[in-house]
Length: 171
Image (cartoon, rainbow, N blue to C red; front, side, top):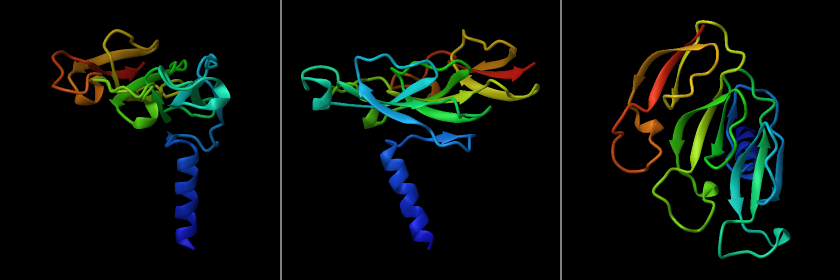
């Protein structure tokens, strides 16, 4: 009986293109759309590829993308999105990584193409967390410290030369 549940989880993960959503009980709504279409507010891009249904293929950027609605993600919940994806309001980057689903073309890049995002909206006062970046301090949060982290390095190689993370606390 246990293997049935494992098989269902593996099947669901493969159908969602490896999408990980935590902090929510609701199933994520996904759509496959042509790459030239705008990604709606509150949605993220999680996979790119070529499809004949979206026109000519090859030669440039992939012409199809999978998008996911993040409206069901609760406070403190996390999602993984491609770096070219718009970041929904209230979400902040916590890590950069690479995955083949987030390649926009068949070419290789020296930069990571996926981000882990956390939803800070709705977290209680006193919550402390670390996010990537140094300039965009979320409203209602104070900077506790700044530091270097390999998780927040956009470039795939070498060590961070400067501080690239900040630990913040909700006021």
